[in-house]
Image 1 (cartoon, rainbow, N blue to C red):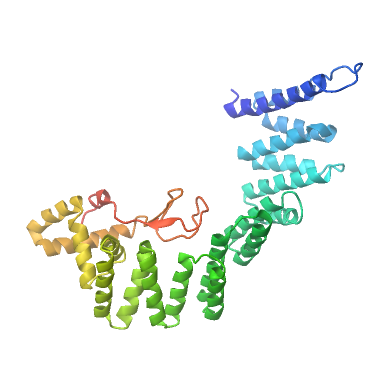
Image 2 (image 1 turned 90 degrees about the vertical axis):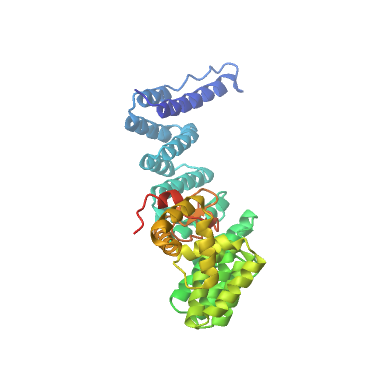
Length: 394
């Protein structure tokens, strides 16, 4: 039985054929000129489609495009439908066949090249798609779309400098700001340079990310990481504390680094005082502080331990469980056991979720791999407590 998509495809060609016939029948023509007949070749192709003979239909329509120049738009539609249905190899054949025509107009050639580039992109043939998009980005009517596609390809290939170049050219040609994307491209370059211990280059990339653009959350974090790696702990702490003050959810990224610095400097008492001051100004941060401490197994700091205890005892499900355990081993031991179990659980469950598409991950991803949006992930604020009860606490 023909599928619904087959009927849709066949219907499209029947509509196009009928439209062509109608234009010939009712359009301007000499009075003595008879109306053109409905093209029998379309009907043959439709017969193949309705009988699920897709390969035969493809061959038939490919032959038609070499004969009748008026069918080219129909074949563009055919190639597009093949691509949408995931039959990329067939879409590629259709568009390659159009390009092979020696009498093809320049505008039609660009259209075929653009369609073929999208076929290659769909098939994951990034190098072939890139070559065509580069060609089309140089003065064709598809220049803006080609630059946008190149930017996405360079993102996938992690070729960040070329992504910067494409995005900057697209800003000029497309008339829209890509400041956020460009800032992240520079941050990617900065992190790569820092990984090579080329801190001078890393600082310059961060400066490029923030010059003339709104300051990104990531840029401040990269600056703090560079300061920390170069033993400029004073600057690093200043940046980390400012990050938390301005964007509280980034405590999940900043707190472990802050604790590491204070521990290395043997100044945990100063950290306890600093965190208490932060909570005095913003009491609502207590839950975030507790959750971050649980996830990263941070303890031994009075203000953090107090936040964690309050956090556990104010969750009804956990509080009931802790009460049950307290009968046998005391509240302090029950709290410690529950906290340890929560840390183990948090290590194996997603900690971040994209606000645009809901994609979850264990670590912070600045570029969501699902919806390709930048800076849309946020950390969870609590562990799934019903999952805790499914794990035995040992």
